[in-house]
Length: 179
Image (tube, rainbow, N blue to C red; front, side, top):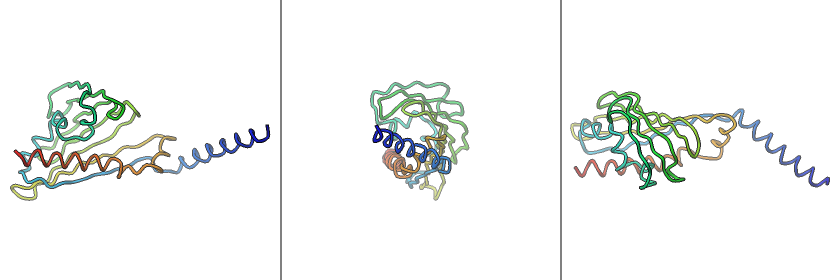
């Protein structure tokens, strides 16, 4: 009986320690990746501002070819919502175009429902480097509520999500440079 109480005490102490650490751990993260695309900024921006085009280049969207998708509004304009419901890897959620600055920035808000609830900002930015060269920057920033923020101590979001952004931008580059 004493051993059982000792084990329960140790487990309870570890849980209390983790909860205490979570109080002082960061609660948000921001990552971004960029690629150069050998196309004019207008052509690149016109393509990326349509969220439906992510079906062809976004790693996240391509994780489940059978995912159910719904659309509300006019794609390529503020207020357009792209909803998805997919397998365990794809999860469920929606993304909404919040603001567009033509040829410069697309502000997208992603609302995750499953496997974890959360909201992220995922801006796509374009910068003309020459008449036929565009820098595309794709970012993501979000926060986690206490005590879930403790996961940020153990998960490198830059590494985890960065791989998907890199692959997505590589796909985008390939698609646009073939045109």
